[in-house]
Length: 304
Image (tube, rainbow, N blue to C red; front, side):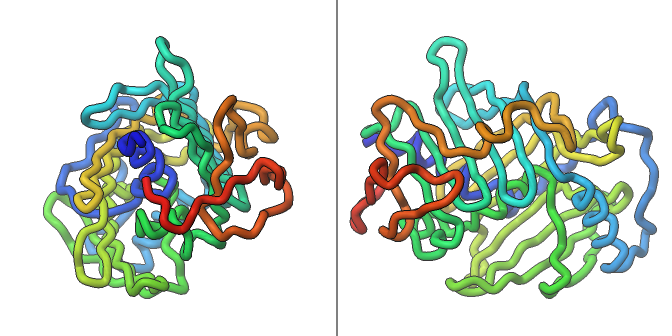
C-alpha cells in the first residue's frame, strides 16, 4: 500500500496545522492596513485573550477557490477549501493533468479523507466521538478539532488554564495552555504579534515535553468586508511524523461560502472506493453518514 499519500491526508484532516515549534518571523501581506497597535506593550493575559478571541469569534465561515497545498516530494495541488462552525471543513485538491487527488472533510458528526493514489482505493471516515479510541488516534495523537485553529480560527477556552503572556524577541508574546487528554496533558504554546494581536505560531507538546508539530502563519490579511484577519500562508512541521507542508489560502473570503452546503458537508463517494470506518465497528446513522450496506470495517490490526 502507498503510505505517503494517506499520511498526507491523515495529517491534514487530523489537524497538525495547529501545532508546535518553528521560529520564523511573521510577514505582513502587502495589502494589509498600516500597522495599528491594538495591544499595549505591557498587555495582560486578559487583554491578549480578548483580542485573539474577538477576531476568531467573528469568523463563522470562510472559503477559498484558489488555495494550494504543497509538501516536499509531492507536487503542488490546487485546492478549494471551506469552513463553517462548529466542525464543518472541506478541502478538495487536484491537478490539471489528473483531476481530483485529495478530498478531506468534516461535518458535525464525522470526518473523512480520500486520496486518489492510495491502494486499495477507499474513503476513510471516523466519528468525532470515536476518534480518541480509533485507529486514526493510534496513528496520529492530535485531535481533529485543532485543524482550523492552525488556519487562524483560534480561541482561548476560558475553562482551561492559561499562562503568560511571556514577552519574546521581535514584539511577540507567548501564551501557554495545558489541555488534559485521555493520553496525558498536552501543552500548546501560542505566539502572538504583540502589536497587532495576530497569532503567528502555534506549538503543541506532549506530556513528555516532546514537540508534536508546528504551525507558522504568515502574510496576514484583513478582510475588507468584515474587518477580520486570517493568514494567507500556513506552514506546518511535525518532527515525529517526519512531515512538513505549506498551505496557501489564496483568495480566502471570510463569512462567505462557495458551493452547495448540502454537498460540501456530506461524505463523498468515488467509483471503486470502499467506505472504511476507522472508528468503532458499530454502524453509524443520521444525516451525513454513509448507508449501512456501504460500510466496510477496518480490522484492528490494520495500518497504513
